[in-house]
Amino acid sequence: MTENVRVRFAPSPTGPLHMGGVRTALFNYLFAKKHNGTFVLRIEDTDQTRYVANAEQYIIDSLDWCQIPFDEGPGRNEKFGPYRQSERKELYKKYADELIAKGWAYYAFDTAEELTAHRNDHEEKGKTFIYNWHNREKLQNSLSLSSEEVTAKIAAGEKFVVRFKSPKDEVLVLQDEIRGEIKIDTNLLDDKVLFKSDGMPTYHLANIVDDHLMEISHVIRGEEWLPSLALHVLLYRAFDWTAPKFAHLPLILKPVGKGKLSKRDGDKLGFPVFPLEYTNETSGDVSRGYKEDGYFAEAFVNMLSLLGWNPGTEQELFSLEELIQSFDLQRVSKSGAKFSPEKTQWFNQQYLQKKSDKELADLYLAILADHTIETDSTYVEKVVGLVKERATFVADFWDLSNFFFVNPSEYDPKASKKQWKEGTPDLMKELVTVIEGIEDFSSENTETKVKEWITAKEIGFGKVMQPLRLSLVGALKGPHLFDIMAMIGKQATINRINNAITTLS
Image (tube, rainbow, N blue to C red):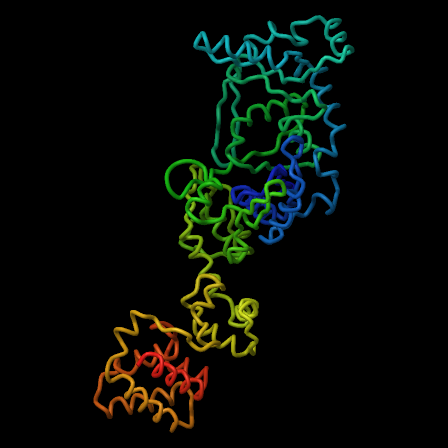
């Protein structure tokens, strides 16, 4: 690809960034980096009624956490700034006027009440009201009114919108990088509002103007914008501008049932749909985030990349650099991608296993501090190395390894009833004597000595091993028993066995 690739992610700051939006940003980022291009962030805040004050920073923080930061945008390399549409307000009026002058748009003075009356009238007749070629010259607009009437209405301060004049009797042949050729009958298009009475453009006008002025080469966005493609291509034609290439990404679908993945699905099934935790400043409601739920950013991004895209191979684990090298719009699916909470956990588990014991120990130390445990980081590294294979999240380490740091205060009732029998206390007392005589308390040597004693007594290993594990851990869980003993040391091992004898006998 020889052209200068420039893509943009253009969210509205109306609340937290849904994971579907993050995936759109990710695919834009991957495409840009694959072609040595530029990833632009533009804040589309033309709808001031839905604007949320902390949403823009949330979007930026989310992209940074995912390690897909924008190259150009608010406060960063502002080559084509400003990058907030509300700060470009004066710009759009000029382009709306240009379309009117060219005959591609017109003033419409219809009130909300009048349009509602038209809709109701059509519904009573079993029809659908569409504001376009078949009725626009009968309605209150500059196509049906004289220029004097239009001038007078504007001078009198009457509210108006600017509508696009969709062409009649034409079949548009459009090209989508993912979906191929799309044909649209222009007679079915309505005359969309481009400029509102409050002096702000609608998304349709603003995004076309901004994409042109910011020299966007590819518009990669969600399939919910597919119905707007015809209008956007027509707007490029009306301005005599070269249109970018368009690619519409498939929806992310619910794990159960049909339809688009929503926050409600996450609330119901117990998983987040936002990258970061989000607090609604008005209601105070807190929405869960993948970061705060313990997911690694790399795992989250890897999971998202495979929702609607596949590399054409069996490979599932990709570093960001590998994703950049492998990404191809031609391998993006046309159909929706079903989200799997279980697969998402699997990805996190895979990334946890790939991390070094030191990295994980550094994270675990914060959890230990919450439990008021101060300990040596080298010791924690060894603990992590013994338990991490059973973990999906770093937060799992505490349940998997707390017995390395604190003595058991209680014993699993079911295991105690099954494993602590009439002769067990005497066996455990004898075991204590054996342990006291072991000088080299390494895992290997201790295992050899204890097993020699069991063999010499001609008893089943389970009669000793299970009560011993119960004594040291408080339950029948944990890594190799003699690794635990070597880690906590001889005296702690003896103390725990004696405590179990006292408590359980």
